[in-house]
Length: 212
Image (tube, rainbow, N blue to C red; front, top):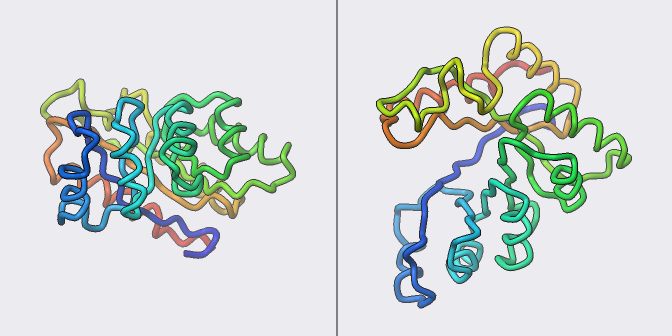
């Protein structure tokens, strides 16, 4: 993709809390078709460290929801910073400063958070190697279980993709070459496959916008 063209990667999030440290269970898991096409896998502090190491060894990056998980993935999971995605819905300036310095991929959860990244990059002389994206709320409504759905009008996560925000996002991509990704998550349990596909479609349509 060009510097101004958002692109996507497939991230698969699931828990492996039950895995023993032995390779007898974890190795077959990472060799199955279940992970075909996956680029990132969720990294949890409660994971068995061996599972993290095997995920990285099999070519997967790690998706993190807290700065502790980012540090754990890099220092203990031995994952290259550029293969780590930081998706926390509430990132402090300290969190962002660490990730920008390390070269970690950041997905901004709000326009305010994106403004902090712009500010911190400017303070650092625009030297960060971090790729940056925005997390959008495609406004698809709730699934069968409202508490596990994050694509309604009142969701506290992500940037609602209304006309005003769409214009602001497009303007940000045009202004900042390092802004290059779109992240979307509509929910987990109670969200049918068709709803997940619709969310991906909305993100793709935004990414295909003529940014020139």
